[in-house]
Image (cartoon, rainbow, N blue to C red):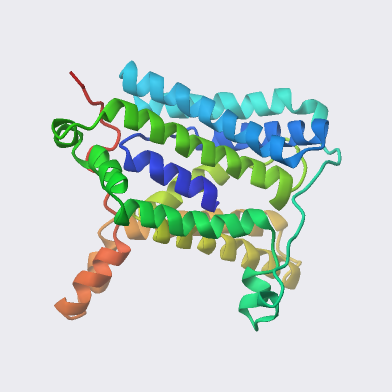
Length: 305
């Protein structure tokens, strides 16, 4: 979820909405598993997934940036198309064994109480996600190129007037974000839910889009949203074991419903109402931390003469 949500954050920071996340993750997961299972090479599986994610993002970019078509419509159609393609093309690979990402425990650090089991007894994919969170935040808010990225999503005309190639940069960041979503798909089929089955990652793409809004397009808050969703899934699994009388379907959908409720609360005027009784000195920083403000030019076409 971290890879998918930060990939979409980068894309949307550039002013492009890639609603194909659901189909991108699903098709990339299938491609990753098919390549890795056929070649017995995990690296090729991840590379194939990243390429697939970038290719789908290229379709989004060409259709919306060059042809000026609706970003919502193009993304939604691609989400449906890629989901169906994953089912059709992945049929030969359903429920067969394949390679998985090996665990890599870090000596000494893994023995730290509480933090050791949580952070340092995983695999390279998880450790890389920690680096991705920090590097994306550092790039956004501590580098000139990050400032330029935010500028083409907020005020593309002003960025163009200062010499930025808005069209090229939007293409680049859309493809880069798509590649990260492809890696997210590979992470599902080669690590988190190893293998491939019908609609293997169903629902996670839509949740990734919701997490971006929940996180206010800030990589640190977006990552927090991804971890919150993971915690909800873990709690649902524990509750299912503790209360076997309740149908399993209730617990499987509960994290999705709770994330939607959290998104609704943070996206509306509920935050202002909840914070109203607090002193003004507390209210402003809390409102800034909890409320989400999208890039000003998100979803808007730009004419570069």
